Length: 105
Image 1: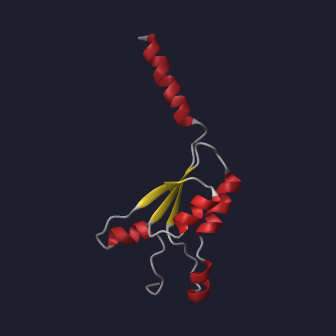
Image 2: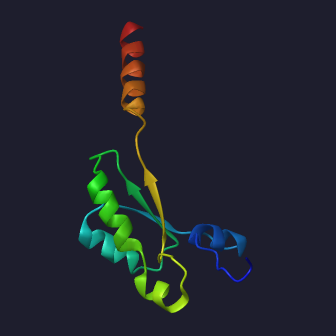
Image 3: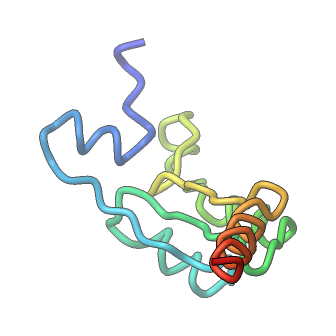
């Protein structure tokens, strides 16, 4: 197990006493390709607006470094992908509830 490198760049940076750098990114091809080639430790895909699962699937595929897989037989990406998906509109409903509570005051 010790021969397998840490695949999560953020955890690797933190373990080494460094700061892990993550950037938000839309799931558009150009943006994802730019992020995959960057030196970031991670990429966060914001999926609340719009919720695009086919786009996310494509973005995750674009993050995979196939040259490294061929060289080392270890599946990895340049930056670890994080995905933020809203839970059934819960955040929107919380906002409405707070606004409704204010109007009742």
